[in-house]
Length: 179
Image 1 (tube, rainbow, N blue to C red):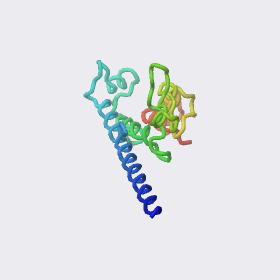
Image 2 (image 1 turned 135 degrees about the vertical axis):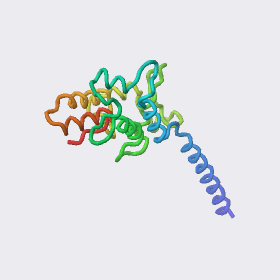
Image 3 (image 1 turned 180 degrees about the horizontal axis):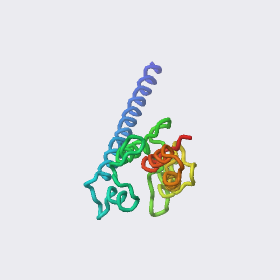
Image 4 (image 1 turned 60 degrees about the vertical axis):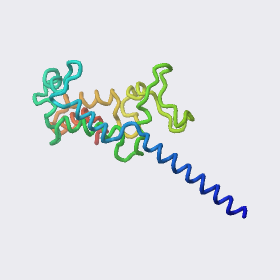
């Protein structure tokens, strides 16, 4: 009799935990496809935000004549930027959403994600600290501001076209340079 009662309690606990996990998974704020779609919307040739257009900026400030439709490694800039939105959330070869825990910033105390239920479990650093990590130090890919600058500099100064194109691609997608 005691064993059947224990089994009922255990079954009930497993059921409740399953429901909690199911709802927690539904609470993911930004799906990978949504991040890609937002990036593609922002780089659309017709989009302007407070007078800013990426297409216009690429043409007028960076000398990329075709703007967001310029091709590097056979794909357009806008496609690389779309990929960047996806890979920032779910880079290949990494635990899904591992990087996303560093996408938060609390302006009151400059902290990042405090972990699940404020326990510190899976906590992350502030998004401001994360983006300012030194070159080649972020986990699951190198996407920091200094990494992007390194790729862009290499794209402008590399002696051969293939290396320049790879670095332009990395500037837009912000992924790890393959050596």
